[in-house]
Length: 104
Image (cartoon, rainbow, N blue to C red; front, side):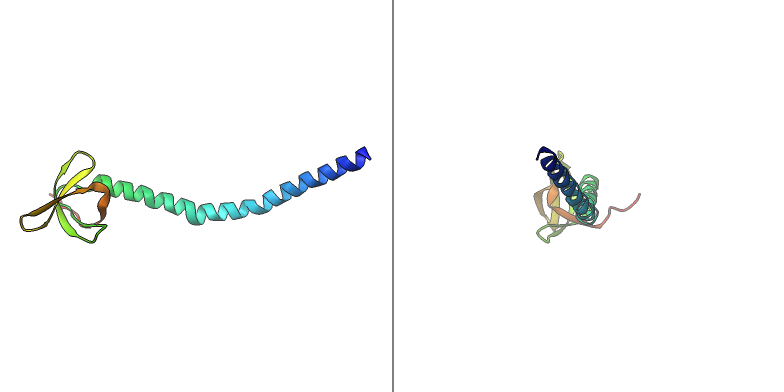
């Protein structure tokens, strides 16, 4: 009886391993199709936020177009959205750069 129960445990152990090996490709596909591209986009976004500076024409997450006139610290930018109209914004509110500052 003892030998039969040991054989049953060994069979259950190999069944778990087989299930794990079956699910492994699913996790790998999810990593390469979902997680890895998201991490790449996050790094690109962080690089964009670090590079924005005075003179850049930007679009905010709210859809406002403006030009960065100055920065204050690492988190605040001052954006001119119209003649004599400047607003303070959080740096992460920048959605994209429309026109980079001109090369000197």
